[in-house]
Amino acid sequence: MPHSTEQAEPLRYERKFLITGYSHKDVEQMIKFHPACFSEIYHERTVNNIYFDTPGFGHYYDNVEGSQDRLKVRIRWYGELFGTVGQPVLEHKIKKGLLGKKDSYALRPFTLDGQFDQRQILNAISGSELPQQVRDELLSLRPALMNSYTRRYFMSADKNFRITIDHSLSYYRISYGSNTFTNKSIDHNATVLELKYDSALEQEAKEIGALFPFMMTKNSKYLTGMERLFL
Image (cartoon, rainbow, N blue to C red; front, side, top):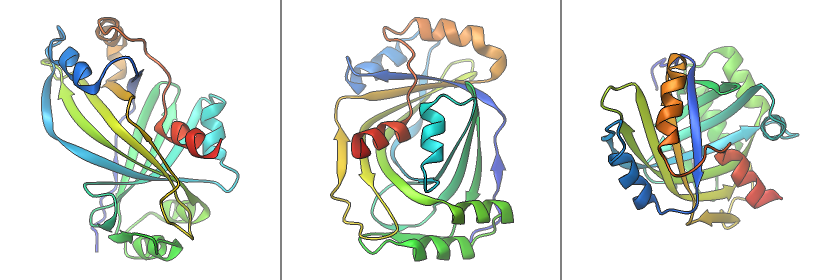
């Protein structure tokens, strides 16, 4: 059984760049030669998510409409997409404008395959130590989208700025029944760069971003996946 591992991050800023004119290898080279002296801080790994939404896709529309306060609820794990999910983490990603934070809760393992349905999530919830409000909220939502991508991690020499690069993005429809995972979309061209930093360092972040040859763009993998598969 997972231990009670609720973790709450402080609010921080995130600048996102959706890059299509350069390969992810090109972007990695730009980061390594940036004057802020970024270096890799973690090994490359595959990130997987199941996003949950209301029956009327309220979280999706909050993002589309640019609501100041936005919420994403997802289960995240690393490594293989299908099979036994050994260390899933339930995450509440809370955004207030450009500021964001993430509350995380360990879940009991479950299996992701063609037999996936609500029972897997119910078992994961019942075997986990979750606050009652978090438990009730997840039970009121339903899985809407699954995605997977490869991520690399970098840190500036002064340790004030972190960059992640995501590439090889795949999106899948997922529900509580009839999952064949054949309804999917794979994006071989896009790279997503995220610059993360403390809210007091906004001016320095602007200067760091200005030295990249691409513009900051609003980007959400959840929105992108929903629009690729549902619209």
